[in-house]
Image (cartoon, rainbow, N blue to C red):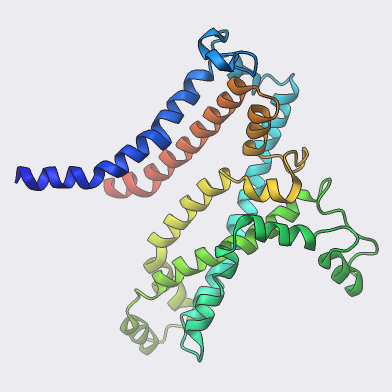
Length: 299
């Protein structure tokens, strides 16, 4: 029995070691330097950096500094971005999953085909969308002009339309994985359940509401928490589409953190902003576990 336990520990040792060096140690280091005024002048010996207590954290919400205004706006932007990306992407993915769950010629090929946006590297996918959103030569403006929806080219990559642009690109990039997960959930539903419901006179909507949704509910819960956490981590799409400074209309926490830490060399402030974001995500995760797992066990 002891040998079996030892073998199990040996199997997980590489994963635990990787977690310690890749996640735990950097996280601890980030928390440690978030209490210091660490910058390019004292980075060689971080112990000489002044200990500023919670000043870096207060800077994020003091309502006076530029950093505070941009950080609060970035949190608002990521909430708007996440809401529309997750909501629209989910319903699009659900519709496609329901179609792909039905038998038709070439279904396997189509199932593989829809994954192309998701498996395309971010640098390629969002550069492709950057070309589409170009002001004068972009495909989107050309189509909208020809249809008559707009009378002059729209600035998608600069100004107030930037957030809408990145939402469109992110929905295109992310919905295939959600669709595949929903399709996997749909395929676990026993067909005799549908047959029995139809015999009893259930309509298509009633079958969806009382059979399909309850069966795929666990999958939906998993998809939602994954998408929420992924969207709070959003960075690549903003960086590729807009560069290191996407502007106030499309600023998100990660772009601000990266710019403060690695362009302005305010490592202590960047770490504090990262810790705040981590605490927000931890709160969301705990609330999810409470409402969808712990309360279910209590009931």
